[in-house]
Image 1 (cartoon, rainbow, N blue to C red):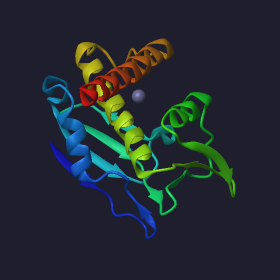
Image 2 (cartoon, protein in one colour; image 1 turned 90 degrees about the vertical axis):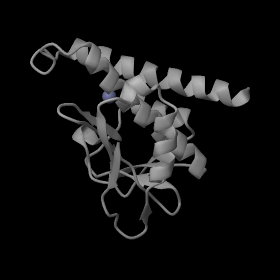
Image 3 (cartoon, rainbow, N blue to C red; image 1 turned 90 degrees about the horizontal axis):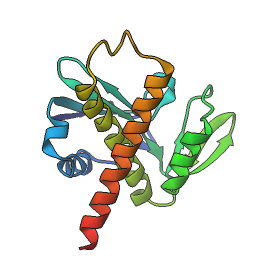
Image 4 (cartoon, rainbow, N blue to C red; image 1 turned 30 degrees about the vertical axis):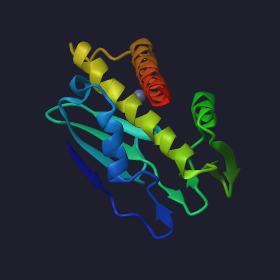
Amino acid sequence: MRYTHDILKKDLIYPCTFGDLQKYVQMVPRADVRGIQRIHITNRSLWHFQDGAYRSGGGAIITLSYAVNNELVRIYPTKYYPIDDVISDWAEFGGKYFRKNGRSCVKWQHRKAVKRYIQFVLYHEIGHHVYRRENPIGYYRKQTRKKYKEEEDYCDNYSRQLLSKIAGLRKK
Ligand SMILES: [Zn+2]
């Protein structure tokens, strides 16, 4: 698996290093990540301004769009208004949502909290990889709202289960 990133504008940082991401990937069952070719980090907007994206095909690619400033604030593009589910995902990991200068922002308390959130997003995207391998037929043509929701729920569950399994292992 390769790790790549876009160059960031001054005053922005990626909270997770390649080393962090590698460590998170190693915590995933090997079979689940087989076929993922690359993990890319960027601060460019993804489809629907999501924090992560998955692209299948010859060599799957996971993109994480996540950079913060020195105060650990993530600033989204002007047009973005997150839905309640997204705001509660951030809150679950300690991220506080607010609006400033017409933009949606999330303030994180510690580097650890934002890293844990990105780990959650990464596992969600790996969940898409696992899901689509199990549900490959006519995927793109037959995508319906119900199926989309079903897949998103699957990925959230996949990610949460993995995180709690990892947390359980640490306590032992
Ligand atoms: Zn998703």
